[in-house]
Image (cartoon, rainbow, N blue to C red; front, top):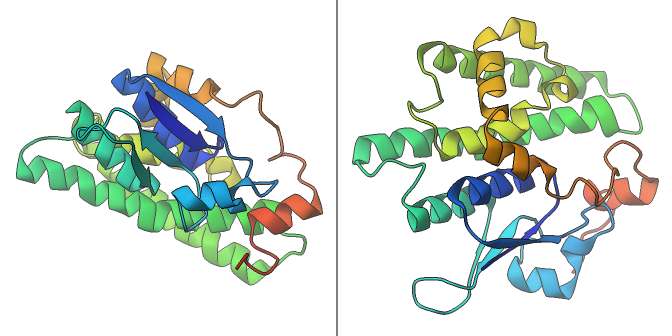
Length: 230
């Protein structure tokens, strides 16, 4: 059994998709990031960076519970554990890993900033809105280019697609129009049709709809608008 500590955001959905695709037995444990669950001593003991998702693999290779945090590391761990969604040859493996790192270091953070300044910020900051919308536009052009040449990001369906897809489904939050990216639209639809992805995106749907109507207190906790916990 794998315990998954998550909230149904882009980063949380990466892991539910991977777990469903691999057929692992898992339990999803809510970490309400609007209420500050990520700052509790219990959760901080799992991830000192106080971010979800985190997994605890109770069936690890050495028989002891294994904690893994950071979504990219979790995806790589699960790919290695299952032997799926990451090639075994060196060239194929690093073709996938470079796109996984593209997501965790660029596409995800830039899209997240676009979400904040275009959707959540209590005051309009035109310079920031333009800066992050433009950078996300550039990244979508990169994504559309590679998907024009490949069915999936790195050739076959892989953890690179699983990492990028949940963030790309929020293109509207990022000020993007899919009409500008026909290859991305084709790819989004193809992955959305996968039964495992449909099951995975249902996880946590009934926990909260806080993303649409957040209180000021929830925004302060989620976006670190107050001093960090010691």
